[in-house]
Image (cartoon, rainbow, N blue to C red; front, side, top):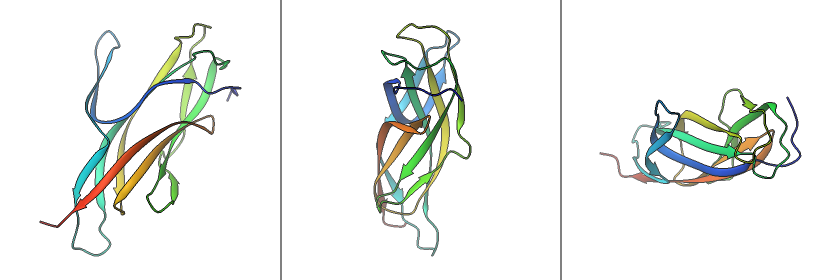
Length: 145
């Protein structure tokens, strides 16, 4: 893995329902959200679950990021302060060759989250082990049906 001396420029880090990639490579994110109302369960030990897409768009900007392989992962911060890396394995990100400030990568992943607590969660994007983005996700647990 190549090291970087600076973090990449962040264009977007969002949670949404779906990400479409058109034939020309253009991405469309639909139903961008930062707040969910989930049903609370009466069953003991059952937690609210959520399936979302996460999109991060990173560019070189003025950073001296080396071309080649890097690692990215997502850390989930719970309202209680607990922290957990939720990407099973880090993504191997192949940073493109070139020195243009607009050179970069788009990262997309489907996340299935177990959310046992009501409150504000944070999805932290780590690039080569350093945080480059924090995306809020508010969870409100509604009464059981």
